[in-house]
Length: 186
Length: 283
Image (tube, rainbow over all chains, first blue to last red; front, side, top):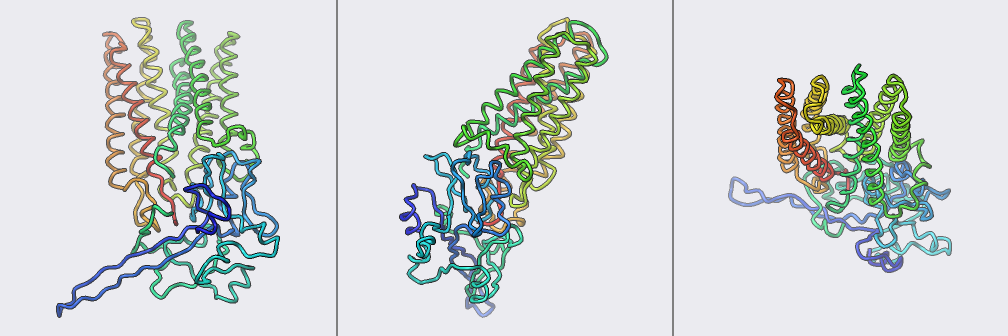
């Protein structure tokens, strides 16, 4: 997240990658007076998923939001009117409004770095090497076709090109057992 | 989404809906009457409708980050409801302009009435397209017919109360026959509002992350009740004014102006609550 903001020189409040802390569960008193718990907490690091059926591209009135031949969804700033309708619709909060520019911005998969044969900044910077990138089909072969987890939305909404290895206590998509505990960072 | 960021849209939607309502109610006020003074009065209101519409469209530009790119918004009519809305705004604008030109030229009553019906129908089509902008799969709180019905309700009440004020300002010259349509449209608007408000309260279980709601459902429900109360009081006051007018006791601005003010206040508050009821699936 920090590497992305730094590398792309993003203004304060514009975050192309966000890490949500999804937490829930409670302590329950047993009959014998002891306690049991089902508390869970895990993180989802999410930027634009360059969806197969991107809702932002569909709703954009100017066609500024577009998907290129490589499958990368990006904004054409020569057309963007700054209406923020893509921001309203994207269930991943990927399009971010830049107040100074008066236009939308978003993760462009570090196109320039890819062209230079480098990895995207978030992939390079992640100290746990938890973020990978590549061809979607190859990633699915490598990590499996894992179902998405809460708080992500149903995949059917936009068909995101995203594979997640769920943590052991992951809640299913649609679950309302937990909540995002760091909303100010989203 | 920041709080109150959509304030220009509150004015844009309400002004456009008022203008459409004014044309439709004006057609009913005109009725079969060929009375010159009534025709002149309705023509003035058509001109006012065009003016309000234009002001609404200008205010909508405040909402844009780069207003100079506005012409590009017509590039995606095939898929984007927002693009279609902007196209329909143009169509209704032209229809209203044509209506005003016909009035200025002193065209036959029949062709003027036909132009009013056409402009009104285009206006209703615009309201439908406008509602589709909000009726999207990732926004569950607005994913129903409630939005369109709410827009129609505002159109009816605002258009009717505007005409009631205009008629009352004529003093004793206000034709009694014209008062009925104003009240009928206002009551119709209130009935539509009663249908739409429960649909606008999101079901928390439908949200993946209930924290994505700007206002909690309980707060939306109470605010909707307040909206209904204020607008309802306005319509009740309008009914009282109409009853007095029909009894020959005068149709006075002392009642119609507060009625209009209450309806405007209620609708503005209701529209603000509508935007604050925004919720989205996902993160």
